[in-house]
Length: 524
Image 1 (cartoon, rainbow, N blue to C red):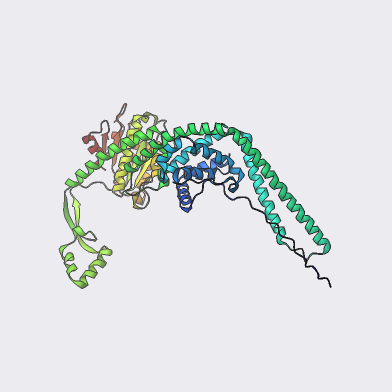
Image 2: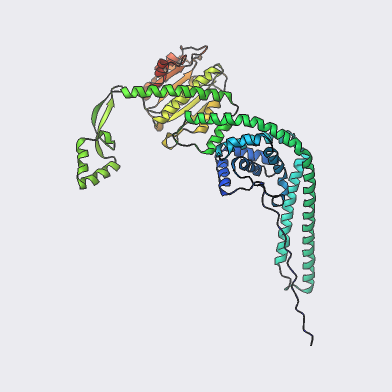
């Protein structure tokens, strides 16, 4: 008797998915985390990625590859079969940079340095984007082809998913007619997938041929841009380090913050000049303040509670010899309940918040602007060291909005570098109005956080105020009990007349001698 043959189920079709990689350079978790941290800390890097993504697919992956190319010690490129065809242009640009003579020079500055690698990535990415916008690397048709291939990749993946879903369905429970219809539908889906995949291969091959024709031109232009980046990178990184030392917090700055700082300093001669002046002025200011405080005379005023070990009453120290009282000493120390001397200086110095009004009118352009901002940033450093709040109010004409910045409102009175750069770069120009910024400063001093603060007014003095306003301002000043220190920028035309109407004291910055610096900085 013939044996019945067992029906064998048709083999399921196994489809290879498209590669998931859009980056050409292999990276580990540390590299990717370093780049993510830079991206999260740098608004400029995120904006560049967003702007570039409107012109090219996978522009963000290009930036990550540039970072790895500059940062990593061992560079390994993936095979073409492991990367999506729509990222083919990225490979050409990366190879053009890697094969140039400047690559070794850039690597000397960026290898294993997150901040410099990020800054170089940002500068190169901006120049690549400029070349793409101007259509000097590839034509608009080439860009459309890249987007078309990306859409075709999405279509292929969608069809592959449909085929896999059809394979998962079982036709055993269908009727004879239903099974026949199911097989036809399955064949149609598989045919659509095969057609989409074949079209993707064709488009990718044609794009590869087109990009080969522009490869040499792209390499030449990218190398020319890399020369400019190499020149900018060293200067910007050095200036960023100088700014960090000038307005440092005593702690290491995050790489993303250094990147953002370097980006804003790159090619900005005004900020470079300002950084050098702030450095010199800060040196004089800190030296003078140290000298004054060393000579400051103080006297015992009363007994108070606190935790200052050097001013404890003698009998409090005696309790440390007793095993039980020692524990009570530690408890009261933590609760700031130990008895100590209270000291009072014979010549008390102002220690309240600072509200600095900075003149940004057209008459302050040039050296006056640099001097005024150098004084402002030096005062900011003094405020940080003394744990004092600092608000900056930049003004010009009556119609121009004020730039009001809380410079160190964070915990521990740390200086916010981004706001420092905003202050340094902002210059509205136009006319001059003293009343508007001083009214804003008055409103600030009426708030509880700025109680017992003082106003510093920095200007060249070329403005007039109404007698009624001046009289009202003096009454408010007496009522709130604050002082107004005016600093006259007397480099070029200047005037003392109006400042005398509302200032308690006026000093100048005509020369940064010891006496001038003492008059300016010791008062605050």
